[in-house]
Image (cartoon, rainbow, N blue to C red):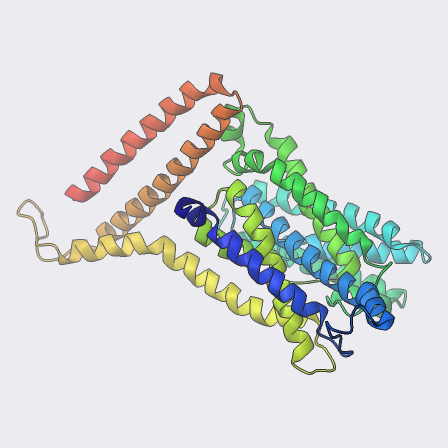
Length: 414
C-alpha cells in the first residue's frame, strides 16, 4: 500500500483537487444554483446542461490537451522551453481560422477546425525542420526562434485581417475565454480525449525519438514516422482548443516542466499527471477570473498569462541554476582544498584551469543523466523484442561509462 501511494500520490492528489473544484465550478456564476432546488427547478437544470457543464468540460479538455501537447513537443525537440505557444503552433492555427473565414464566410466550426489543423501542422513542421538544421541548440535560443517565427505569422494574420476588415471576427480567437461556450458550439473540443489516448499509446516511442535519430535507429524505431505522429498529435490538439476557446498561453510550457521536475522525464510516467495538472491549472485560473470582479469575469488568457509568466521566469532560473550547480560545487572544493606539492602553482588556481574543471564536471553530470535515461529506454525496447540491437547498445554504453569514470578520476586528481 505504501509503495502504491509513493508511485501514485501526485495523481491521487491532482484528481481529488480536480473533482472538488469541478463541483464548485458548476455552482459558481451570476445565477445561483442550489443543490436543494436543482432537481425541482427545470430552469436550473437547463442552465446546468446548456452553460455550466459545457463550460466545465471545455476547461478540462483545453487544460489537459494543451499540457499534453506541450509535453510531447518538449520531448520530441529535447528542449524544456518548447510548447505550442513558443513553436508557432497556436499562431499558425489562428492563421488557418482566418483563412477559413475569409474564403468560406459561412463555414461551420468543423470546417474552420480543418483549416486550423492543416495550418498548425505546417507551422509546427517548419519550426521543427528549422531547429533540426541549427547546430547550436541552446536551451533558450530554440524557443526564442519559435517566438520570433510565431510573431511573423501573427503579423501576417493581422495584416490580412486589417486588409479585409476582419479584425473583429479574429479578436475572439486571439484572447482565450470560456464565456461563450454553450451546448452545440463546443463539442469539437472532445477530440482532445482520443488524441491524448493516442499520445499515451505512443509514449514509449516518443521517449526513444527524443534521444535522437541514431539512438532510435539502433533500437529499431522509425525516427521520422514517430516524429511526424507526435508533432501532428500536438498540432491537432492545439488547433481543436484554439477553434473553441481561443488562445491560452503558458499551459503547454509550465505545466509539463513542473510535473517533470517532480516525476522525471519518462513520458509514460508523466503524461497522465501532466493532463490532470493542466486541467487543474486552467480550472483554477477560470475560477479566479470569475471571482475577482464578479458578476463580471476576466478572460482566462489574462489570468494564465499573469500567473504563467511568473512561473516561466522562475523555471528559467531553476534550469540555469540546476545545470551550473555541480560545476560550482567542484570549483568550491578545488579552491578550499590544500595545494599539492606537485602543483606548479601552489598558491593559486588559474582561471583557465577552473573553467576546464567546470566544463568537465558539467559534461560528466550530463553524461550520467543521459546514461540513466538510455538504460531505461533500452530496458523498454527489450520488452518489445528489440533484442538484436541490445548487445551493441550495451557495449557502447559500457565503453562510454568507462571513459566517463576515467575522466572523472583524472579531474579528481587535478
